[in-house]
Length: 323
Image (cartoon, rainbow, N blue to C red):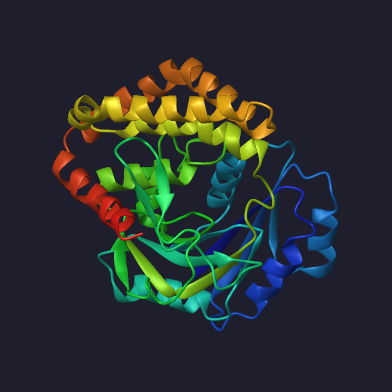
């Protein structure tokens, strides 16, 4: 069995496209759980009347994407977990291809979908994610026209959680204080944090090019919200997860990246998103003690897995070089 978990916040206009595409899947051994994160629109009424087969977990107040996904994980139990954004439309073969790959290749714990843009369907958004030593995450193929250049079944650093599959047993080994996703990150880069922790445990990700999902970019979040949390979380995820030998070698690259973001935001200071990123970077500095504490809690693992971690990072560096 497969649990598909969809976090939702005021997504009543998005859910029909997402859920109708799931109804059309060629594989049927799954259950959908929508975690409603304190919506104030008619999401709950829509689900009750139009999608009675969907299990709904209701959070009384908006707690952020990481908390919503954790609530969905706590409410489900199938051996395979699939996370799916509410602003997506999956190809009818998507689930069969994605889970089928994990079934065929037991050495992999996570599986990444091919994400294309919803409104420009020939354009890629992610062919698996990578991570750089300066703390900047990225997606293979982003903004490229899909000409088949990423059609190989291959290992990548990690999946974008907007459309990804996981073995539940592995997620349980990665949980910290009983939670798989770090709720202090709130949203944006919570999947990067999970991918980094997974790599510390030797967990590998398989990119499945035939598992295609169309994504409306940041239809639920985005803009000022995305700029704030990316500005905040890039630094915090690096501080929490980078092995100490790599910290010593690459802290200058991190600083250069952060300063570059500052100057870019200052050049566009009249724009709300630029001001939001600056506020996020300031918030990251205030949150450093908390995340340094998280680092020490897992330091026995972080600093003893350097060889495998560095090898995994090369997947991202190689991917970027090809772009």
